[in-house]
Image 1 (spheres, rainbow, N blue to C red):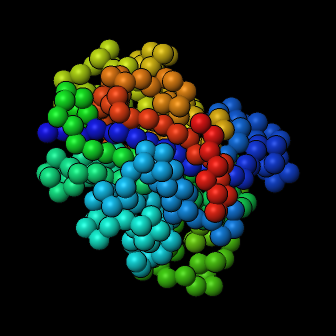
Image 2: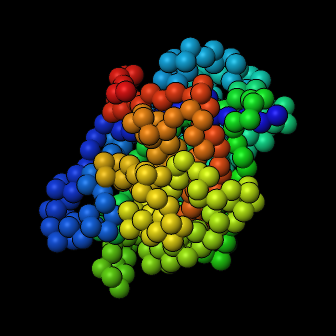
Length: 357
C-alpha cells in the first residue's frame, strides 16, 4: 500500500506589493540589490483582517468543488502553519467547521515553518498507509507579512503570503511516494524566530520597543527575525548533503529524477543548491519572481505551479525539498499521479471563488 497526491490547488491574496512600491521605503539601490539576489519582483500580501486560514479555506474549497468531492469523505485534515488564527483552539478545527467536514475527520495543526509541506505529506502518507484515513486534505498556509516589521528592509522584500490544498489518497500501483527524509538541527532555532510570540517571552511594552541592529534593520521582539547569513550557510552547506542522503536511501540519482523542486527562499540560494547537486537546467523550476518566499506554502505552490504550466506531467518522478526554521528540513520523492490535477485559485477576495487556471 502506498499513497499519492491526487489533487492540488493554491491560493494567493489579491493585493500585490511590487519592488517599485517598496522603493520609497527602502530606496532604489537596495531594491535593485534585492532583485539581483532574490529574483523577486513582487509578492502577494494579505489584506487587513485576512489570515493564512482564509487562504487555506479558499484553496480547499476550490479543490473540493472542482473535484466534486463530498466533504464527508475527508477523514484527515492537517493545517500546517505558524500563523494560525488562534493559539487555542487549533486552526484545523476552525477550518473543519468552515469546510463542513464530518465528525469522523481527524483535524490538527502542524507547525514546521518552511519545512511544513514535506512534514505534512509524511504524516498524511503514514496515516493513509496505516489505514487510519482514506482521504487526507493537507492545507499548508502562511501569512508572515503582518508579523514582519514594515521597516525591516531584509525581510519585507523577500516574503509573500499564500496557501495550498493537497489531496492524498491510497494507491496500489507503482506510483506514489518513494519515501521521506526528515531532520532537525535544534542548535539553530534562534536563526529564524519571533521571540515574543509565546509563553517564554510574554508581550509587554518592552517587547514592543523598536530595535535597530548593526546592519540597520528595524524590528521588535514581537516581529519575525532572521539571521540571513546563518540561514544561507545552513542551506547551501547542509541541504545538498541531505538531498544526496535521501537519494541514497531511495536508491536513486539525479539522473533518475524528472524534476527537482526546492523551497523558494531566494534565487541565489536555490541556484547554489542546484549547482552543488549538478541539477540540469531542464529539471529546475522556480516561482519566486511574482510570489516571493511564501515560507511553508512555497514548495506546495511550486508543485502546483509546475502542474499548471505543464512542466509536471503524469508519471514524472519528482524530488521535493524544503528547509528552514528550526532548523529543519524535509525531502521526499514521488511519482506524479495521473489522477492529479491543478486549478490555480487567485487572486481572491473573502466571499469569492474567482479563479485563474
